[in-house]
Length: 430
Image (cartoon, rainbow, N blue to C red):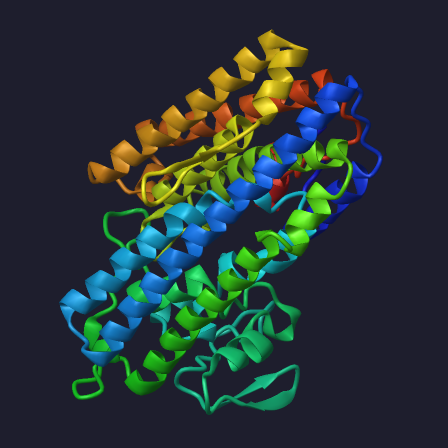
């Protein structure tokens, strides 16, 4: 069943609690196979996080090169490294829902949207204050002291520890995103001031050139970017460890009941398909025609992130993953369990997963042809809106078949994340 969205974290906790009551009624041999499926899922998770770490390290090196010798070329190289890092990471997102270790950690690396005025200078159109966030324009790069919850905080050194310990979600406000991919994205591209017109953020490389500084505080901006890149590496190292041979995430699944592990896999697939991707990341922005609601809003890379979320969902079902070096990690799959229980349901779900990926690829093709995702969701773009809606519909449709897979495996009490954008769209406009 699909539950109404609470928040990403609370919904995942609720779903995980529900899994403890799950029942998996299959013969003894099938139960052994289910344990193999769970073990394979953990192996694939490790491979995905290892690739995410490898590409994050490459991003860190590119950031160091930009800071050491700012130029149009080194800035572009850092941007290219950031885009490359998104591909394996997005394929891990199906592991978030149902795995509390991942969900509790995820906000450190992929929180969005963010109030970028917390970090750096912004355009006048951004405004100067927010009723919901006293740090809306704190601009920590320009200010060596800021105020959090009425207390003066020393921001002299923009270290990884300061970003993660003081600035991330400062004041318990989720929009105060100080770390992770999107903070780095903002520092590499700057704001996208083009609305639903063509063009992404266009931060100049001279924002990092202390000899010819634009934007002011180039040394502090460089320190912030360097710290954020290094923090991303260390956060991913932690998650690699969690999925390693003795990691807590792996042991929780592999040492637990097979039925609970299969439920985790399907919870990740259903929640990412429905509430998170179809709802919060796609339908909300389409309803509002708002580029601020697109996932990679500074870089115009959203089409790629959405595609690889969909690929990750499909691969969780198929029990396979193509690594960045071209090799394939695969093993016993949920698909095999569903096919043994009801071949028709497997055929239905497999086909729908392929349809969703194809619909996402159509969005990518349009973006690569010059019509970025924020343009596709723009008001009045009938063809672009229809293309995005088609992918949303495919995600919703495949979720129904994921629910059927849950039923044929006799798994009860799985709660998928919901979204007001899908369940109660009128609330979006209130």
